[in-house]
Length: 306
Image 1 (spheres, one colour):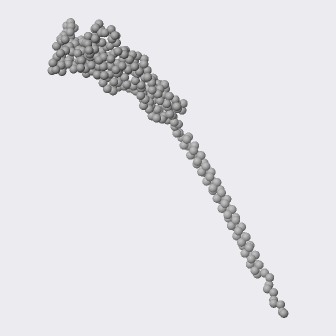
Image 2 (spheres, one colour; image 1 turned 90 degrees about the horizontal axis):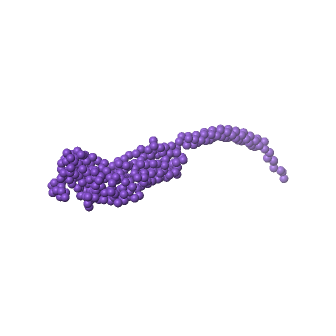
């Protein structure tokens, strides 16, 4: 074991690594382990640095090495560094993930000579900063965000999102409705090692969409899929006909009713006038007859003598 492996606390403080400690990995897919480091020799080109990933329990159980000859057979062809060591990036990709890739795995940095690339005594394994992988068999299920109802003839937007741990080969989405022109995707970092990809579908709903299922399917690297769906509830959109026709009918009825009222009023006024005229004539006749009767009535007879 070299001096660097058993260095003093003061010296070891100059050898630093940042590695996510726990990460989920989808079996048969891929996983990216973010990693960065620093060493006491400052900035060096990638050619002067050698990066190695190994099991925490035994640094001779190598899962990644640039030379490839020392890698365990079960990991050969499945691991690679995504970052440049000269930029202090030791990010590891494992693809495809096997159900025995639990780890924990640790990063080791070795400085080599400039002339012949031979290793120097400057080397360090970051056994206090290692990653342990949790195997996932079924893939994560997408999450849907959407309005409760859609309005016929209006744009409707549904967001489908899923989290993953392989940004180098992120999941892809397919929709049961919509075209490519109606879909937008966003990919962003949620947390150290955890990513989220979003697919946003916007389309104009029609009457035929009511009660139909809208399905979002996420396909992960390696071919595994998972889906989420929502049943559309499309309500009719109010239009001018729904407003104009009832108003027009109500207006027409009101006009007709008003005209009928006017006609009837005129008719009744005329009839009342006629009745009043007839009643006046009748009263006049009765009055004249009464006066005539009183003036021309029978005379009172005289008393008979005894």
